[in-house]
Image (cartoon, rainbow, N blue to C red; front, side, top):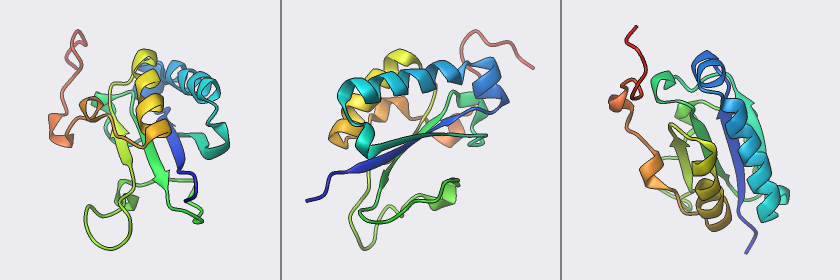
Length: 135
């Protein structure tokens, strides 16, 4: 059986990047991917926005199908269907990540292929983070 491969995409849009320091999230992924020795099967990249700004910083962790090149850009419509043919791939859009949560995401999702459900919010839960002023 082939090793599982993942692409991790960190949002760098104005809300996630400028206001919520997604650079620290990206740096934490670099450190954890290196520390766990999974860099040979894990790509790390940036995307300008996932459209879930009030829930940021947002990070997509997408399992890549075996022997298939995934596109460099991502759209939510590209997520694999929840049912149907083929193996189910471990894919999740994580919300409100911080460097501490990154440790668990890499250990669980990237290393073991298990999504960390408690770091995922429903799209209809688009509310401002605690302590952030109303606009």
